[in-house]
Image (cartoon, rainbow, N blue to C red; front, side, top):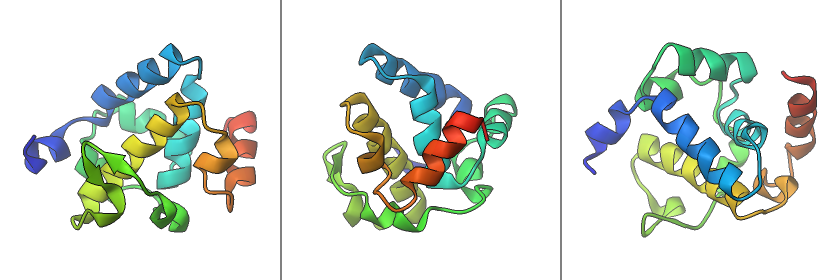
Length: 130
């Protein structure tokens, strides 16, 4: 897929695909939102706004409050490419998000998915709805 086409995809079109993927494996939409919030710094209301306004992935990441500093700890292969070797920052962020959702679907523990450091805060936000 050409990168421009990937960047123009709406977050609203991708989010339900992520949710369906993890629900087939017995996980929840809350788990998807937790990992996306951890990665991007959005809170639940911010994610909902991104879905409701139909922003594309380029805008979604450009307007993200902050990329988690531990995102660089995300490693592995997505679409046949090692995420840590992707040179384009936006493509890498999108693939980080894909990788996190894959880890949720595979049943990894949330503390491991969130790379330990900020896992407690992200899990607390999940239970309080922030």
